[in-house]
Length: 303
Image (cartoon, rainbow, N blue to C red; front, side):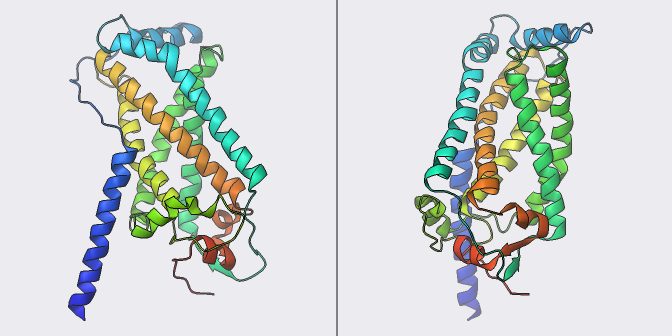
């Protein structure tokens, strides 16, 4: 009996590692190494407008090595791709909301205690700081259209502070939810049916405490966020030569595109796709009907 149990545990672990590898391969960009050199210098101390334009000038520099590539991407493509993301993704979800609509569950029936107070506090801090990261990052991307100057300089500093604040809840969430975020075989079934969100019918879908979509967002945010934090540290000018800054700025922007798309998806699912879903992060409770449908593999006890 003990050997059978160990075999099942080992099989489950192998499946988890295998699926986690697929998640990571799909969600993480390769980070190229670059030699570190002298610190980035030469930013103007004058007006805010001068500061912003000189900052861009230091990053783009002359047309050597990564300077030419970054100047081309920054001037022609980055803002266009981000614009497509922040318009196309909400448009798709708006159509989903109008055609399929939100899922409604009985909030007056039995309730399942889903999130502890500590988890809710950590998630709240993470949500605020991460939202500021996304908003201020987009402001920097569209800095030229917003006039540069003090507003963009403030956005850049807010971006830095938000990143430092986000680091702690990010680590805590990784520790709290690591086991429950490991991919399982039923996550593949969830992805094939997109969690049942393309149907108005309330049919149990294969998911435990967290579904496959939440797991993908989690791992992309953890590892992608880690790369974003490191490249952002270098971009800020912490002891790297200009060519390294240019390369890491490209990586930072490309990863940012994926993170913004995932973020908008997470916001829609949290606020609109399930009616009253925000209550679970305020009270910690989910309706039993919602758990039975959207988290059909989750084992719970009624209070």
